[in-house]
Length: 602
Image (cartoon, rainbow, N blue to C red; front, top):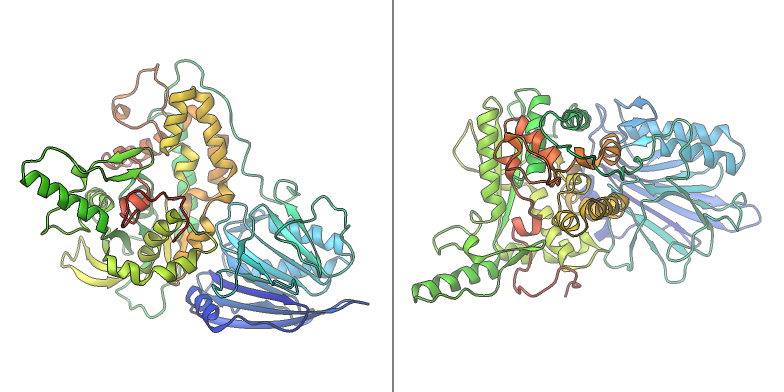
């Protein structure tokens, strides 16, 4: 994982200022490198290109410096990604170097801009894994940039007011606004040389347009060339036949287990030991752990894959929320006075409202231990320890006082930029402090609680399961209102906008601590299987068929995943209800209960 900064100017070289440089170095603490290139166009101006990369070394047996450069041509690659495979070839060493060699070869082999563009985009379209990149093709005076089709890595751009420079960066410089996300819909190509038709239907208009060069895009769905990975599948719109039911014997349960196992293997095996660790500390992997269904299944399956002597850290974050504490105290006072009424404030979870009876805590009780995610986290930990007693599970309780939340507020706001709503901020808080990984920890082998910061540089996230398997409240609502027509429409909408979700925002927040989030549910092969899987093999909303005994109490949303959890022995986890992170960790509505998540940050 890396930090990227590339500036293109018609005037002079432009390097990031000290503030932005520090943000980039926080993402990649192992190495910082810079390159400078000048494009000189025949009968035209010169272009000054500055490239900077910071490196978090997670692939290969040594640090591969960036930007990657080829002296003979002057071409440069800034790569922030994990290419698990390119075409049908798995990548076992450093993926950035492997990809760069292919791109340079494609550039050398083709004389024309058009032919080289086809070859380069074919390679990039064949990459399986999360990435953002900028490739400077010095041979043809072209620049390519973009993000993977699911948008799992951040890449922002900024255009000067006078349109004389264009800047790309993994994270925004708050002093140089406005920044925008590069869309995850295409590989983009900047041409400083003739070779792209000006009337091309793929030419760009709007925000991402500059006066000193032409930009075109090579859309993902329009460029499935030989050797490229297939699209993310064609959504299965079929309605269930009469009498079908989803149960433990349904083939999809084992198909999901196989896909998830393969996805986890490439993401958690062969992770290098963190720098400075000693022999007794083999913590390479941590799980962002609420105790919910999605993340606990990942932890349970990681146990089956990792060597038995590797510890797994479970990071559980909880916040002091003044609004919730005040409401609970008001309720206690009202009850003490014999009052029967309840205060009207509460906190919302989708379309459900949790009453104050579920959030009350006394003056002596910790505001952190009463957080919903802390309670489910400890409960899920007990189940993991019971099922996998030989594994050393370290539960890291990250407790965030309100004063500390406020102290880091501006930093979180800068990291989530250009996202700027109250919901963005509340989710950003939870991910920011969870990724820091500092808290009070204990293990099943060492029950004494100690102050601890995880050394794991890879954080597993359960994001993506709700979108693929119908886990949100809105999916149940759609089915209740319009049956399978409504449910299928809602699920297809979620799949279609996977690349437009907030993964770029989450990448900026999590990577700030020199750690990399990995999303096993968003593996391309798993997503394709889930998209093409019929609805009756993913969800259990059928109401006219008998259910098996083990499935009787399982919610219909994400039922295939619940059945997998049940089959893995996690009977309690399989029953857990969906709860958004901002409500489970209590980062939502810290002060006023009537602020909407869509409101802009004040």
